[in-house]
Image (cartoon, rainbow, N blue to C red; front, side):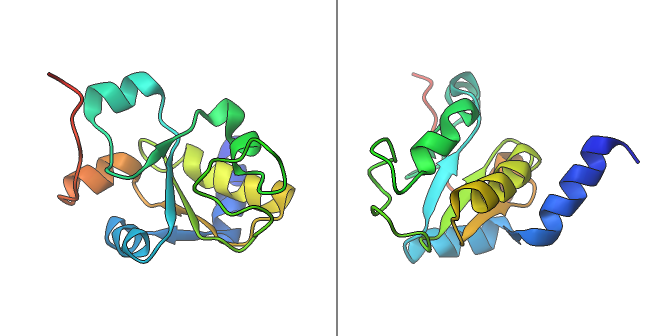
Length: 131
């Protein structure tokens, strides 16, 4: 097994992963969805209504609820807010969820099994940016 496969396996043992249906229900009840896909992917393939686009390279700053740069959808200093990360297929989001939980002290960071592709294929809403 490769080193990255072992890292991914260990991360997934410690995080909660949602199906697209579970993620949609969590959004309905107040969770914050953060889309890690690059901007060009969101523009080309669509966006999930209500999702906040955050580039992976600034994720820690944008989710640090103790800092001044966190996204406005998160409440200051509340580490138990439910945050769902989504990427294209569910790999980057698993690693990122584990990282921000362990390094920022967030307690309820989830990711979506199969990522955006599974969300779209399950028939959940996607907005197109194409004119």
